[in-house]
Image (cartoon, rainbow, N blue to C red; front, side, top):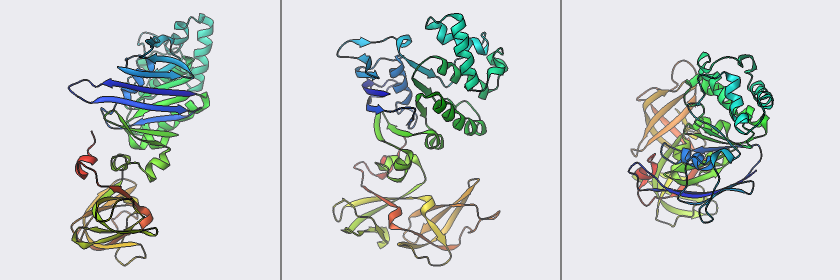
Length: 374
């Protein structure tokens, strides 16, 4: 499948920003995740592809079929676009049975009743709900309703499936279970899906590729591993999660690495940087890469500090350490036992290697502004 989207649209609701997306995908049977905070333009993108909203300019094409072209005055109606759409609230017809809900799409495409029932039955078998074909939506659990809505998308005959926060209305435990089943069903069906979410864990676990959006602009795109390990910006590194940010001045830089001076004269060894000498720089270190010990460690960077807070996170604990220069560094450690390995007020050493550090030019609007989730 080849998907080309180059659109712009004035954002409403008192927001003077303009949404502008320029993306081209050549993909087959992939899960593409649009990830970003509320208001980033994720749902707007899906609505424009589906034909539910019209861009102010640009074009949209799927497999060389033009759905929208502002200059050529082309705008294919939603029902004629080969796109399936799974809404967050599922939008099931409450007075129709499960089978009738799923068969609605094929009937709308002028399939015979027999053909529509056959298509709907196959889709229900795929989502393992054929046994509830005669039930009404109100008789099903939230997870089952989600699967009915997915079956309806599969029965639409579309090669492209749009998923708008499809798990957002479910409780946390069911959401985790169904995200993997959703990906499995999409893969088995041979579809390409564009999945919208603002849940980081969901994005990372279901995506073949992630596109990170912020205020109507693409900030980064790539595989989950690449976006996590080598984010394109400070904002992306923060949004993907789990990073410490340290401000400093670049003192030296060679092919073997750089030396950065933090406040209080604390020196950090990092990888080579393109920032000019004596210029401000921001270092990012994932929390899980920060090690803590009561003793010295053989790491590229070491500092002394004091445990200021211990946070229980279920499968892990997060320790907040105040360094001697006043900076706060968080370290995320898998559970060592029932009791914390370190206590509040305890003096410790923290350390990390230079390969664990991501270096960024200092943002023009300041670090705090760059980290804002807007």
